[in-house]
Image (cartoon, rainbow, N blue to C red; front, side, top):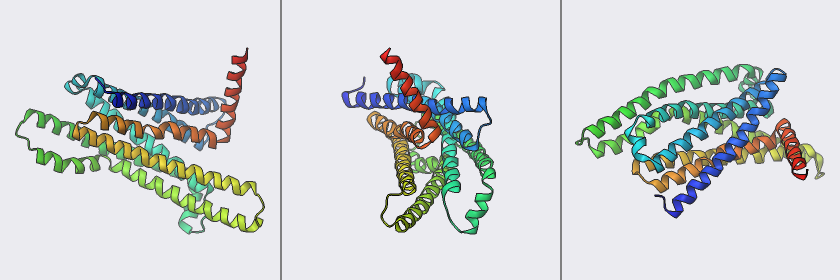
Length: 301
C-alpha cells in the first residue's frame, strides 16, 4: 500500500502523463493531417517524431512505475522488466534524438554567426537530420547489448548469494554511465546549441535595442520571447535528467518514495515542453485556438 505522500506523487505523475499525451498527441495529429494534405516539411517531420516518441515514452514510464509500485513481485519475477527496459532504451533515445534535432534545426535557421563552420553547417542543414538519425541508430545498437548485460548481471547476482555488494556499488555508476553514453552525447549537443542560440539572440536583441533608441520594436520582443522559450526548455531538459537520475538511484536504494519523486520530476518535461512548442509555433497555436473556439461553441449550445 502507498502512504499519503507516495499517493500524491503518483497522482501528480498520472496527471502529468495525461497532459503529455494530450499535448504531444495534438502536435502529432496536426502534422499527420498536414502530411496527408501536402508534403511534410523537415520541421514537421522532427516535431511529429518527437511527439510520437514522447507519447510512447510516457506510456512506458507509467507502466514501469505502476508495475514497480503496485505489483513489484509480478514485475521482478517475470521478464516484463527486461522488455520494458529494451523498449525504454529505444524510445528514450528516439525522444532525446528528435529533441536534439529540433534544437539544431532552430539553431541553424535562426542563429547568426559569421564563423565559417556555422556557415558550412547552415548550407548543409538538409543533411544534418539524416546524420543525427544515423548517430541515433548507432547509439541504440551500442546501448542494447549493454542493457542485456546489465540484466544478466542482476540474474547472476540473484542466483549467487556470495555476489559482493561492494562489487555491485562500485560497478553501478560505471554501468549506468556506459548505458547512457548516447543520451549524454545528445543532451550535451542539445544544450550547447541552445546556449549558442541564446547568445546569438541576445546579441541581436541588444543591437536592435540600440538601433531603435528605446522605441518599442516587435522584432526585438520576438527575440526576447524566443530566448525565454529556450531558457524554459533548458530548465525543463535539466529537470528531466535530474528526475531520471533520481529514478536510477531509487532502483539501487529500493526506495519507493524516491522513485515516485523522480518520475514526477522527469514527467514535467514531456508535457510542459509540448505546450511550449504549441504556443511557440504559429501553425500549432492557430490550430489550437480554433479547436478551443469550437469546444467553447459546442458548450454554449
